[in-house]
Length: 373
Ligand code: FAD
Ligand code: UDP
Image 1 (cartoon, rainbow, N blue to C red):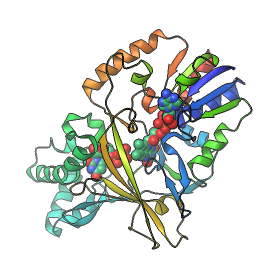
Image 2: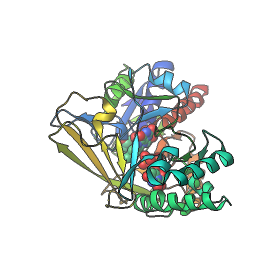
Image 3: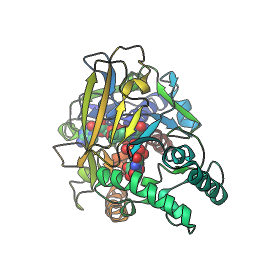
């Protein structure tokens, strides 16, 4: 077989590039994925009880990029959805990100008033303050707050999720969930927040439905390497795996998912409840909140159990953002630069902790490079 582009991976990165190249450049594309389905980690499906579940953990779409929003809106209608998360701290469910509302759930009115006043004076209403930044403040009361939030919200969760302490990761990791100096109880603050009305898999099907696109599922790209001729390869799998771990493996974090069905309409009040301090799992997510299947008389939840990544046994879900891994990544990027006909992109190809919208934004950028020739 001969194609213009071979794309490895049918997730957001691969699907966006395939769609753009096929529809805008009128080139022939073969998309290969070793999984038996499209969608990458965003894949969703109906379970045996008719509940729409996300096989690789809960995926909530949010973006600040109008470009990404407009692009994806060609392939789906949206259901407005503001994700809400709570964390169990000292037996109470508090809003997350930690906000002025969370203060009031935990502390006396007097103490909460004082802390609120100091947060407002120091940062201003509406600020988003990463925990590692809050830990640096001089004020004694805010130091107390920082230590409290660090210990009760971040330390245990981060140890479970990454096997590392917050300080041993890039500050951008815990910075994803900043302390909110406001009463905003939404998990994300982006202007665009919604779920694809018919789910992610339908969205992907539409993206990939083009006469110039062929799909090969359940096949590792190495199996077709010798049989398919192509001008360019776009690789969205793990970059270290591509190079046969030449410079040693890049660390990834994996997860085990446990799905549970409940014969009652609802399991919990909000989409996700985090457990920073107890249990081996980090969080429980109830899909109906996300997907809008409120009419169902039963429900389904997923528990996430973090674990070490072992190639062949589980999936490389998270790159681990920290300096020593960046150094190893640079060695692989140097190898990549030597290959004129191969491009790398995506959460695994770039080894970047991208959200879905960032994966699409990156793919659209790569497409511009491809289109320039
Ligand atoms: P992927 O989706 O990982 O796709 C890569 C594909 O390449 C895979 O399907 C894989 O099978 C295939 N592949 C790899 N190697 C080979 C090979 N050798 N041969 C053939 N195929 C290969 N983002 C959000 O915006 N919101 C969220 O709420 C959110 N929640 C998340 C929750 C979890 C638990 C996880 C793990 C991620 C979450 N994300 C979320 C991030 C989101 O999953 C990624 O941003 C997105 O999937 C990246 O798309 P991608 O195409 O780069 O990678
Ligand atoms: N985090 C935490 N406690 C929480 C929620 C998040 O310590 O209750 C930290 C943790 O290090 C986590 C990171 O913030 O890995 C990013 O959280 P996010 O919810 O964005 O993770 P994801 O949805 O990508 O797994």
